[in-house]
Length: 521
Image (tube, rainbow, N blue to C red; front, side, top):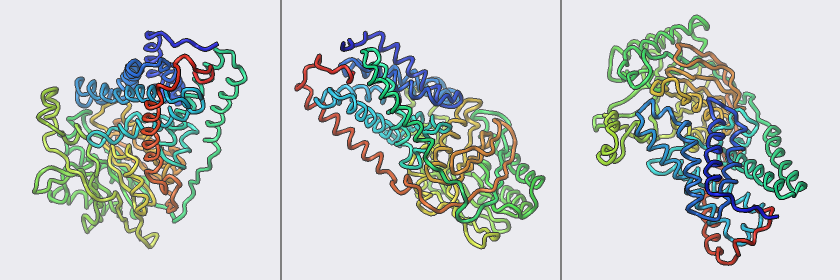
């Protein structure tokens, strides 16, 4: 017997439950399996044949998910910006709801559960790609792929990056939803088949081989988490103390290694908000620390060009020589590091004026050449700064430009004791798998970590502690399938999404709405 359309209020309730389940899949809760359930519940909630109602369902799901997921925005910039960002991101899920309604009205999709699975997956991936790139460069936080760093599904990133991981998560969720509807209509055999396919997808992830072996030698790295005196935005006002903390942490490395044993020391973003290229005292202190360990130091700092603005920069400080290479952040975070349309958004919140000097985007790929005498050659280190790890192209471009290892420099002091730092660590773990590179996430306050090329965390620090990490990182130069494919999986999903929506809208009048087979519901 065909299932009736659910009542309006039951779909709203399902949307709330689905949003909560999906939120629980991400750090700090980290129950990655609930992402599948969250998608399944949303799929069931969107069974009504009404674009505007399914858009509302998507909006409710989105608000329920994003509000707790990005509470760090409330801590960092206040209640109004946090709520505004929550609602804005939820609007993308609302768009998904409307697009899904239009797309499935096409005759073939309307009658086929298999095509509904494919179309829903395509639309979800395209929606994530849209909100990850637009507006103002996008906001990728909350992509389903980032919930799977500890699950077997993360291995799919090695094949085609975050878009494929998200696609498989959504596919499992839809299969679970279709299994439930088959059970309710008495199609037990069909339910078993769908459930089995969902299980197979998870198992396949566990069977994908991820090689972590060194291919071009190894790099001896020390990472310094210096800590800050106070959490929050005040951390930026204590730049001398923060610099001193990272200097002390660099000298503390000598309690665990001999002088000259390290090939590279890495500091976090904002490790020195005093530019050593213009401040003689800071330069002398950093050079003293570099000489003490007899290793170059990758220092997170800032630059203020004479033309105005500022750069978020990492400089490689060679003992006795000073800066020999640098990388400036290519993707400053809107509303955090620069304010687009400042006068307009000031009408909604005075928090825009917390950013007094807008950050300028760098224009070079994030690679830093490090001379390693022990290896008798130069090692290319890939560098991304803070939120850049959330964007697919930046770390990938560094690896395609020759990076044999990755460093993620970040400053999580602004976000206090929220889950922002562990959410970012999940992204770094996915990048390690996607690109087949050992990765060091180094933060001013934590969580810092050493990550193997297979995504496993081998060392991890606490939050708001002063700690050091020492690691032997395998160097690798092979390119994963994901690195070779580049942005093609996302572009294909975008193109298919447009096609299925347009086709569905065009064919909507060719089918009676009550003429759905049970299995397609």
